[in-house]
Amino acid sequence: MKTIDASDIYYRQLNEQIDEIITTDKNVTLNNVFGQRYIGRGLPENVKIKINGFPGNDMGAYMDGAELEIFGNGQDAVGNTMNNGRIVIHGNAGDTTGYAMRGGEIYVKGNVGYRVGIHMKEYKETRPVIVIGARAGDFLGEYMAGGAIIVLGIGLKKGEDLTGKYCGTGIHGGAIFINAKQDKYKFGKEAVLMKLTDADISLLEKHIEAYGKYFKIGTSKIKAGNFSKYAPLSHNPYSKMYSK
Image 1 (cartoon, rainbow, N blue to C red):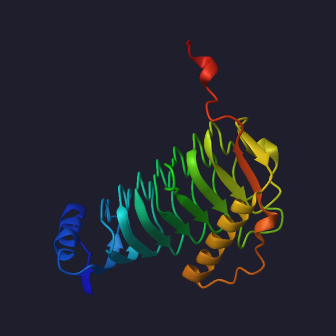
Image 2 (cartoon, rainbow, N blue to C red):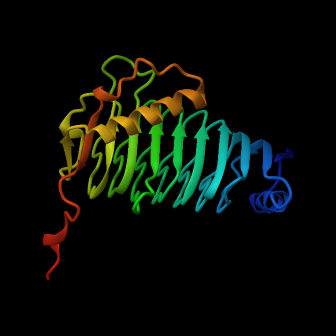
């Protein structure tokens, strides 16, 4: 395993060093990271990077199978358009986490910002997943076209909402799962409360268990059957806006 002290290294040089190292060593630890952008962008499978610090925007952008574990917070656009792989954040993450995400998994121990999962999509068996440990901001799953977003609500005070407003606005694929009986006014008109299926239960159980493993948190009290599922009634909600 190679270790890089990222103190005072400009983001371009840091990413160049990572690219060079992984040609011979697939395991890299980055220490003293503070705002460097694009870490993990486009990295292939079998590469594992541990990040100690606070990476900058677009961490894991276009990632293609690598694994990132962050001991700190993530900033905006974590996993931007990532194709595959896993990102585990032992803290919070910023706005537009999972932007246009096409595959892979993102686990956030704490909170996330606004417009998380915007434009997420899926293709055949490739289904991206975002698991949020605490709560999410406004516009969660906006224009979502596929995949799954799971909000666990761990550590929140009694009566505290798990999401902001306008969740699922423009959603036309995928599903948002909330560990609460969420008020409908929190959701856009395109998102409809639906009954959980056996496949939904299996999906939730799998990722709840994984969340507990990654963050060493007991999750036995989180029951998949208690989640609310919001999904689109139509896969083409804007068809009437355009002439044939």
